[in-house]
Length: 294
Length: 332
Image (cartoon, rainbow over all chains, first blue to last red; front, side, top):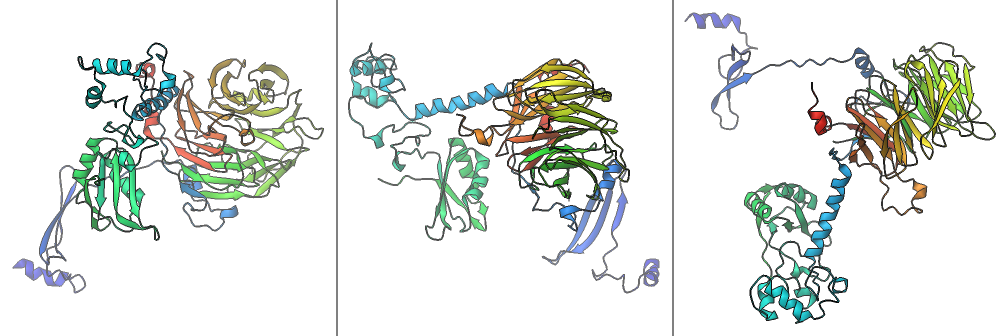
C-alpha cells in the first residue's frame, strides 16, 4: 500500500511509459564487477511479455598516443585535398587484395620443389606410356630402346611382375592399370579408369573426364556468379573446376553448375553440407553428377 | 596481409619517407607533387605543389615541421609540413638527386646530378627547424664528385661522416665536419641505387644494379653481409625490431625485350639480415619497385613502384613470430 501511495507524485505523465506498467529495470552489481540488468518488454512479434536478463561487463581500453601524433591527426587538409572530408578518399586510397607473406627458412628451395612436384604428377596423369619398356615417358626417349627391341617382350615382363605367370598381353592389360600395347586404342578411350585428374589430356573430350568428384548444383539464383559459388564451395576443399551454366544471350545463370574437387572426401563433405543450403534466397540442391548415357 | 593502395601519383615513384614517429608517409614521384598520407589508414592529408620537374628525394625533420624536397627543376624547396606552403628555395645548376638531414637536423646534405658540363656535387647547408627563419644561401661544404658521380648519400652516426655511393658501385667516406675525403671502397660492380642506414646509423645497406645488396660498417666501410637477388635492385631497407632486410627491384621496362626472363620479378624480397637467406617474397606491384621505406617502429613498410602505386603494408603477427631455430633457443 505505501508503494502505490508514493508512486503518483513522483511519476508525471511523461515518464509514464506505455509498456503498461512494467517495473523499472533492475540493476544489480555482481561481485566480479559485471552488472546484471533485468528488464521487461513486449515482444513485438509474438505480443508476449518477455523478461530480459542482460549481463554487462564494462571494460575501458585506454590507448596511449604520442601527443604529436594526436595533434597531427587533427590537421586540416591542404593542397589538392583542401576542403576534403575527413577519412580516406576512395580516389587516392583503396584496400588491395590479400597478399600472403609467409616467411620460411630456405624460401628458394621450397619454392622450387613446389614447382617440380606438379610437373611430375602431370606426366603421370597424362598417361604417357613407353611402348618399349612400359615406363611413363615417350617411346623415343626410352633409355632401354636398344636393349629391349620388342614390344611384346616388354608387355610380358610388365605383366609378370605384379602377377605371376600370365604371359598373355590381353589379360594383363585387363587386370593392370596400363592399356594393352598391341591393340589400337582410340585417343578418347585412352587412360580410361585412371584415378585422379584425367582432364589434362589434350585429346580428351568431356567424356574422358573423371567425374567422380564432380558435384551437380542446381536451383541456383539467376544473379549468381561463379565467384560467389567458388567462395561457397572452396570452404570444403580445393576446387579443380567450376562451371556455371549461363544463358548465351543474357549472360545470366541458367540455374545449375558443376563443381569438381580434387579430393573425393571434400566432394562428399560439400555434398552433405550444402545440399539444402540457402543461397541467395533459393535452396541449393547438390548431388553427385551423373554421367550422361553415351 | 592486406596492403593499402595509395594512388596519388601519375608517374613512377621515386622516394618514400616516414616521419620520425611513423604516422605520416611522404611520397614523391616523377610527377611534380609530393603527397603526404596518414600511415595508419592511407588517408591523404595533403599535397605540396610548386615544383616544375620530377622529384627525386624527400626528407622531413624530426619534429615534422619542415619538409625538404629535391627535384629535377634544379631546386631544393622547403615546405611547411602542416599547410603545404613553400617557405624557401635553393637553386642549383643541375637536378637535385638527394636531400638528407643529419641526426641533429642542423645540416642539410644535397647531391646534384652531373649534367651539361657541371660535375655532380655534394653540398652541405646549415639548417634550422623554423618556418620563419632565413636560410643561408651559401653551402658550408662543397665536394665535387671524383670520376664517378654520386648517386646516393647520407649522414653517419653523430654526424661524423658523410657516406656517398657512386655510379661505379663504390662507396666513399667523407668527414662530416670538414668534407675532407677519407676513404673509397669498391663494393658493387654496377651503380649504387640505394643507400639506407640502420636506425643507429652504425651500418648501412646498399642496393645495386648488379643484383646484390650489401651491409657495410659505417666506420671502416667493411662489407659485413651480402644478399644476392636474381634481378637488378633499386632499393634495400633494414627493418627495425626484426632482423630482416627488404630488397626491391625488378627488371627494368627498357630491358624486357633484351633479356630472357619470363617475368619481371617485381616482388619485395625479405632476407634475414644475419643469415643472408631469402625467407619470403611479397607480390603486388606490376612494375619494378623503386623504393621501400620501413616504418620506424618496424610495424610495416611502404613500397613505391614504377607502376605509380604506393603499397602500404602493416605486418601480420606471423611476421613477428618468425624465428630461426637458433633464435628460439637464445637465452632470455
